Length: 288
Length: 284
Image (cartoon, rainbow over the protein chains, first blue to last red):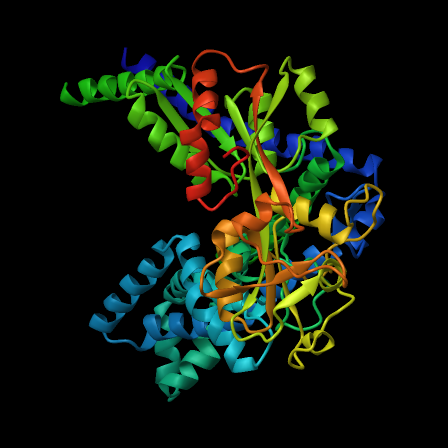
């Protein structure tokens, strides 16, 4: 009886495990099937490097270069802002902060992770957008920079918590050795702790960026969504995610526009897959 | 034991609500964001008078309404544009027969910031502004400032209407497009907010969204015509050049409960609500 129970449970778990892989495979196949249909209408080169995105015109112009560059620019901006702050914050929490401050900071960061992105977008729209406009004296505050700043807030919790774990997992003997040799606290952090935890920190950064590139709601609300090739970070941009979200409702099922949006999905999938695999590689490197 | 019962209870509730959605006494209305407030106002009044009936309204854009009508997810699709041939073909393929009913008119207001000195434009100037040919307010007698274009997203009937009737001047094989640097904002409210706060902005949306925080621009058909303010009287008389019909679409001629609701919309009372929500009634 007991054996039977064991067997049933074992098989159930196996099915659950397989199901997740099965669903991922199905989703991917569906994405490929729907996305590749667009290449009957436009060749892949013109799709990836075309400069105009006018999906509802007749005939539609389906060039997603402005969208790819928009996504990359916003992500890059968010990286520049969130990586230094995030890593420094992790170092402070793991190495410097007294126990009470540490608890307060960790709670604060968890809270930051709990804010829904639409709320962040809304806050950004009414506070950050007018600020960016007046600080830089630009025609509109709905820019890539506004998006980057808001997304940096979203990437930070991921970066801080994973980077902090990486710092904790550096063997204590490293630190003690450094102190024994007469290194100051800062020297220990910079020359011993950070290099020892570097692969984990890189993974943290990649996972944080993975979150940024897939983010939709906040960027749709504050980046202006103009499908133009950005020349500076103070210009409006349209991201891949915002394009899918804004246009899916209208696209006539089975039209070129509809398939093009799935193809945009494939591009997005490839980018975030690459980011996650890179993060995974770094994490495994650490384990060895 | 208690937990088990709780699960059963929840399951029953879900099943019941699933049935309720299919109830004969309920109508699902979906579509145009422009018409959401209007539709909601009709619904409230209608349900007050017919307590047994239930009408649910959601927005999403005219295109969303049509795709729901086609997939059978709603009974009435609100639309601020005519149905496209492609959509009709798709609907026929699924055994749905879209039936068009005109329920009102909407004047599209063009708005600028209250600090902007430019207060009137011709249709040609408007087209040049939104296609990017005119890019500085000083070309229109305003300050030396780059024009910030505000448009709705492509899933909006308002966006499509403005492109076809202002940018392309109604010509079916026009090639004009919105300038690439036009900001595409997700809602009329977002455009209203940006226009209220940005001295260089120009945007467009249904008249109902115009508030004292923005300045509506008077529009003339050409240089020789008179400049007309977007008011209900001017839309009704046909003087104001940018107005469009508002439609609802049903599957075939309305029957039963849907007919009762449509009749209410077209009644004197329903048309008064049109006027109250800042649209223009088709009958007075």
